[in-house]
Length: 360
Image 1 (cartoon, rainbow, N blue to C red):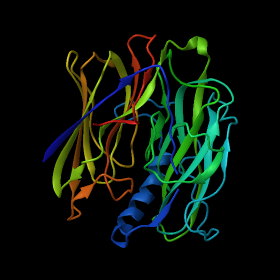
Image 2: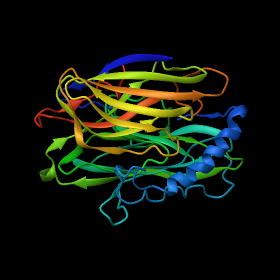
Image 3: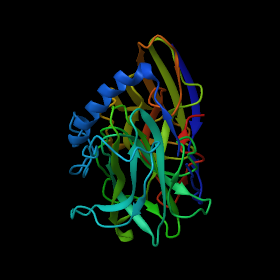
């Protein structure tokens, strides 16, 4: 079974923002044993951050305290995710710097979200992102707010992603360092939002601090400003029983370069292929999918898409649950995204996205 949906990247000069909010809900009992096994595997995957298996990964060192966040078997007995946020600060002395973090605690069997807002005091050019993802962290989304709400940690849900995404990571995502001369710009006064999707399939309360570290560079070193784009398929995603493939198409309005790609599906995903179609056809990614190893790959040299060319994302699933599965934020739902980073061929053009995804 195969279906397709198309989207478009937008060129412009203004940069817009994002907001997300937090909720928790109890995991369904039939899935608990499967998620317990996955959660145990997460600790191993997060502790093994490095390059990708084929040597083409974009890592630079480890991922901080990832994998070490399950603190004890008891907690405050609260009703899901919650805690306090932290921003700014120094990294591990290797050039990485803490950007934003959130503290959380999860009751047994809970799944939920924690968000943290932080307003940047000065311009920042970021040439790399490194997730700190302790045991219990499903995925993180870093984006830009525009609603003027106060900084700090707050309750949220996972579905309210706005117009400008900065970074995303899944289980096992290793550090991403951009090619020389490429960086993402975050301007002074912009409010960033860290959205943490958390779940605890263990019989004990767990807690941790999830965070994003960045690798800042001087503005004089930047030749190309990059943006993050999620390419793939969201609404209408239908994963029938057995083996199925879903396809999304993303159209470039101007000449762009795609220089990094990361697969993101949930637990039924088995394979992902990302290819450019049009004037310079090429395969950016063609690999079996492992939920515990969602790693960025640098595309070297970058894939060049001319105006009107498309990026095609094929997501293959093996659904042995006995029921059809649809798009959704929960681990028990499914997704079909290739997280990509792109920059315009013409360095004077500033790119923006009309949404965090290019799927329609």
